[in-house]
Image (cartoon, rainbow, N blue to C red; front, side, top):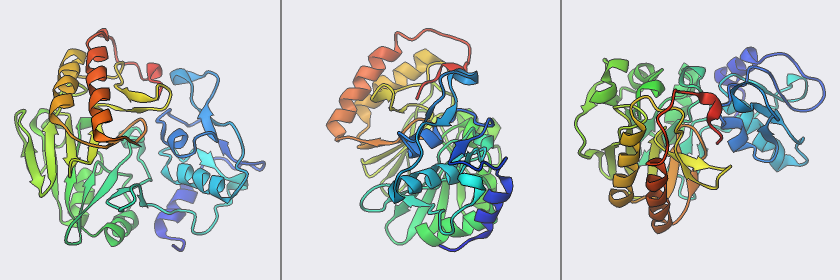
Length: 315
C-alpha cells in the first residue's frame, strides 16, 4: 500500500520528534491499544496518571517487531507512538488488518480520541458485503480504504453510547444503516435502526444483536456465526489477568445489571473470539469461553458499586 491521504494525516498529527529509537509521548491516554498490538515492546510505565500509561520497554530487534511497533503507531488515538526521528516507513500502515485465518474479521486501526481509543472492526459477510462495528477516526480516505478491502459496507453497528463518534459520517459515506440500542439512543438520535428491549435481534444472516445492559443502559453485543463476539466495553480479554474481565470501575449503568448480563450471556451466547472496544481480543474454544463467562459472572456479583475511575483499569 502506497502513501495515502490518511497516512499523511497521521504524520501531520504526530507529536514531537524523537531521535533515538521508538518512543511514546506524554499524550498517552491509557487506552491499551499500543500495548495490545506491540506486547513486550510497549508496556505500562511504573506509575503515572491513570494508573500507569504506556512506554517503550524494549526496542524492536527484527522486522516482525518493527511491524508490531508500526501497528501500534497507526492505531494509537493520540498519535503518541513515534518511530525514530518520526521517520515513517512507506507501506507501514497495513490497516485494515485481518485477525482470523479466514479473513472474516479485520481490525480497523486508526482509533479515535473521541472514543477513547476504542478498537473498531470490519466483519466480512458472504456475497462481498461487510459490516463495521464501532468506528475509527473519521477520514474520507480511510472510508474508501475500508470498503475497498472489506467489501460493500451495509451496516454500522454501535455497541454503546461512548463509541458513537463518527458513526453518522461513516454510515453516510458507505450508504449504510446506522444501528444503536434504544437505551443509548440519546447519544445518536439520528440512527437509522433502533434495537429495542432485551431480546436478540437479527441484524443480517448470521449476525445477532444481544442487548447487554450494565456498562451503559444500551450496551449491545454483536455475535456473528457463533464465532465472533464484538463486546464493546461490556467485557474483554485481560492480558494482565489472562482471563475474561469487566472494567468494574468504569460502569455508567449498574454493576449488578452487568453481572446479570454476563451470567445470562454465559448460557445464551456461543463464540470463540472476544473482540472488545477496550482490552485485548482473544480466541479460545467456545466451551472454554462459556466456562470463563460463567466464572466472570460470579466474580462480577462481588464487585462493589464505585465512582467511575479510569485509573483503576488494568488491561
